[in-house]
Length: 524
Ligand code: HEM
Image (cartoon, rainbow, N blue to C red):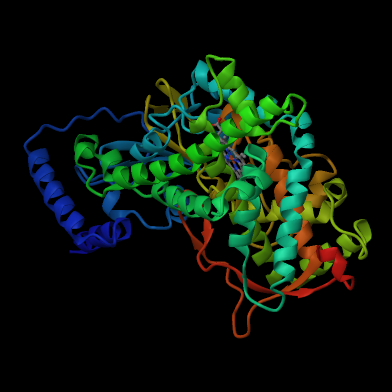
């Protein structure tokens, strides 16, 4: 009975708005379970890591908890730093210590640099043809090279500095117009980041001049939905023989969102192509600053065998926006709760930026306490708590156990970042710990130190770190320099989490800004 209840509650989490689907799933599972008992069991798991007992067919599915990162941490306490669980017929391996993470992302990086190709991931990436989901092959290597070394090269990032400045100033001005009212921090951060990336892809003024619609808002809705679908447990992945039925409708929904994204981007490309032909007729354009989209179109014109195409650009947008917005929301929530941290950051801003000035990117390297605060937030609230799952390209060994080809491997960063073996008083929010260590240059986002790797590590590490680092510092410094922030009357500080592919705040952070600088012209 307990089992039936658990099963029911998990399915309810999976798809709480479709009772018909649940009925179909229930019937299918019962039929398969009956068939299972008529088949002989195989016993080839001798060298696999230990793990909790599983049910035939269903594996550990009925016992899954919606807060998977915490459940995995508890299971590690029982079964050790590496354990296995079966979800349906699919084997999952969970790694919970820096020592074993090192074996995966550094010692055997090449073997573990395929992504897990779930149905949702394959659908949004046109069968793994994008930079984020692709397998480790020559196409992915070329794409990554273009993205990291051309699109996000220091030179190009420098050339796009004005886009970032314009967008952050717009956000500050926007908040200034709403002083004393409730602001949704995640929403404004998402829009700022989305506008920065979209400005870098297609110059914002140009888009605004051409369309009445607001691409940022449209993108926000579609991106949030895609991330949500991406993180949903999908029976099609756990029972590949049922995938054809798409019982939860996850593939259908992902296709719908993919089409919406296509429409937004097709409009942008068409507008740009028209503008290019106008510019060449007028004899302008050759010396113009190149944004992402222009680079993309140039590469297409060169008929390069591997180029950043629309698939790449769309998925890069999704990878960059929701993550940055989530980090900013967590950081603001922690700072508002810890008033001494808030005070220290604002003192630092007064010293480095001044009260008769606005924040510029050039101030960022000197804002060491803010940087430490962001790192401490990443430690306690890693935005992607289990990273993006990897899948080994051949059988290999980790911690003395066999890890079979094509299984799913999770790296539980959330658990490592809170492990008392590596962190003193791990549950305390203490940015100072990153100040001390940073003097020895020990903490950064490169993933070299596997006690702290919120952006992943190895060859599949986040490809957007340079932009993410700049933007999160710049947005937060500007928000905290320009305004004081308080919770609405009667609201309590709340840091509870909602697990998904990104670890969100359960309750969105709503905060009220008040003016901090006496000169109103500093808000323009
Ligand atoms: C707070 C901000 C961000 C966080 C926490 C974050 C985190 C991550 C993580 C954990 C991964 C997987 C790493 C692994 O498997 O080892 C990843 C991959 C990726 N991220 Fe980010 N990211 C952020 C911002 C961005 C931005 C701004 C962009 C681009 C504009 C971006 C583009 C990508 C891409 C393209 C990949 C796939 C790389 C590959 O598979 O080769 N990310 N990110």
